[in-house]
Image (cartoon, rainbow, N blue to C red; front, top):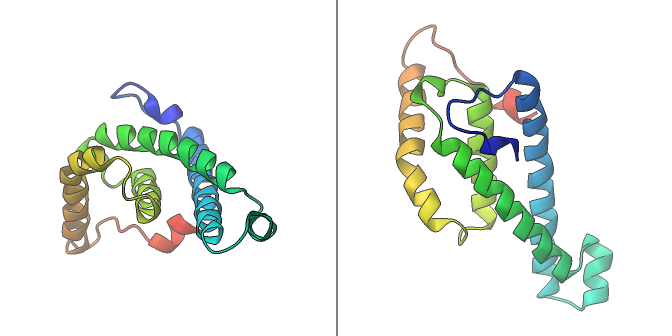
Length: 145
């Protein structure tokens, strides 16, 4: 994945835009795969496939591949310098990681724990910016749409 570039490598705006689109595709795949697993526990395989379009095995494969992709997301966030906290791409990357963590809390426990100081610093930085008049404020609606 393009996020696994060496530290201090700048991602072009075009690449950031492509990756942001990929994040949304990853989130949709995750939602589909997770809903397939939930339905599989409640009904037979044919009924499950009709509702979700994915078999239980396919759902597991999708989640395994997504795990690899989110490993790259975590790696990228570990490389972020505090001077880039205002970058909307970093916000989008964190939002995507949080979406993954809402579904797959058992994956990457150690990596996410190691990332917590960064996430706390990031949140602290944005909370402090909000209190400064005229500072850059990221509108979540702009990033999510």
